[in-house]
Amino acid sequence: MSTNNYILNLLNIKDKNINIITKSKEKMIKNKNYKIVEGILTYNPCHCPHCGIINHSTDDIIKWGFRKNCIVKIPKQGNCLTRLILHKQRFYCKHCNNTFIAETNLVDKNKNISNNTNLQIRLELMEKQSEKDIAKRMDVS
Image (cartoon, rainbow, N blue to C red):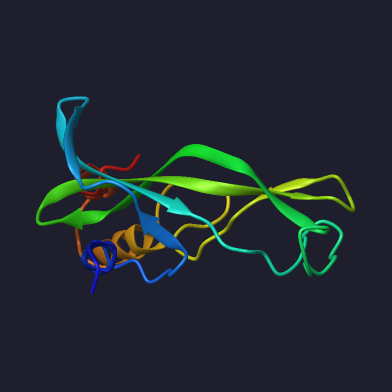
C-alpha cells in the first residue's frame, strides 16, 4: 500500500480520485495548531454537466488547469485540527464553451466543510450541550 493510500485511509477519505501530494505539515492559524494535508482531485469526466455531451475524446472535454486552495475542514485526527487543501481540476467543454470543476463526495459543491465533519456535528447535537461548545470543538462557525 502506498503512502497516498495510508494517508487517505487515516483521513477516512474513500474517493479514489484524490491524490495526496505533500506530507502533512503543522501550521499555526489564529493561535490554533493545524495539520495541513495537500491533495489533487482529478479524473476524466464522463459528460458535460451544462450541455450533456458525452466525453469520447479530447475533441469534447479537455483538462483546463486547477482551482487552487479549496480548504476543506475534515474531522480531527489524533485530537488535532486538520485541513485538506484540495486542488480541484477544471474542465473545458469545447461544444458549449463552458468550464466546470471536478466534484467529489467528500464535500458538497460550493462548501468547505466535509460531509464527515457535518455528520460528526449532527451526532454531537444529539447530546445535551450548547451549539457554541460544539462549534468551538469542531472549529466551525
